[in-house]
Image (cartoon, rainbow, N blue to C red):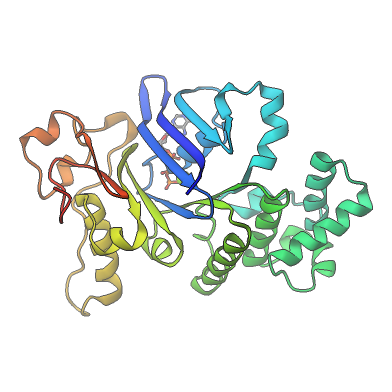
Length: 320
Ligand SMILES: Nc1ncnc2c1ncn2[C@@H]1O[C@H](COP(=O)(O)OP(=O)(O)OP(=O)(O)O)[C@@H](O)[C@H]1O
Ligand SMILES: [Mg+2]
């Protein structure tokens, strides 16, 4: 399958603090890749690096390609005009992504005016279509509403409509459903799967919720302390994780939904390290039940097993 996004040896640092290191990853046409990891692991940094939207203090090294464009080689004006067409972005907080003093239809219409040079009335008609595409009921009326007049789920749909307006080949969604109730969250996930299957868009879905990964993703990339621990097909990773960290994440999740009541739930020992204070070697070693001396010396070489990769000296299952 063709890769729409190619990331090679990406590194992001703020001063002497390395946030991401050694990230190589592809997102393929027509797939939903879930990026999962604990808070502070660098998920948002990775998403923003991909769109070249990190703040000026960030030092970025490595190669990022989106739909054939080497993002960090583009002159800034070209990047500005291209980014909206290449990458649709749904941030975590839909309210913050919307302008509170403009009706949502006008905000979607603006995308068509700015990027396609459409007239106000043409742009409005396209905006109503875009709202209909994300299954907002009565889109003509809804387009006239202000963000605060919409429910959380409808606001997420409006932001999704804006992100998809120019039919970008890539959609990045940064934990967009965490603030929603489970039912609304499920509706948004079902919608994204449907839209994604219709349009073959490549999706990077950021989450810390394995339940969301299981419901949505084709492939999973597990990030731990700024490093990729494991990447591979979703079903394989959930049923037979290679990395001890993934194993712990998956076990915590299945315990929560299947575990007998009254029994203590499985929980990963310790806390994720802060970016300023990451352990040597494999950053997971202080919390890892299988650690041996070598784990604190050097970051492990990355093992490739068919469609899967893992960075661990002592992987689980049949990785060895
Ligand atoms: N502008 C910045 N300057 C310095 N450090 C930053 C900056 N932005 C992020 N960081 C640091 O980078 C690390 C990763 O942050 P990031 O927001 O990418 O994590 P995340 O995985 O998205 O977490 P969360 O699940 O909480 O959203 C954190 O330690 C954070 O403090
Ligand atoms: Mg984040």
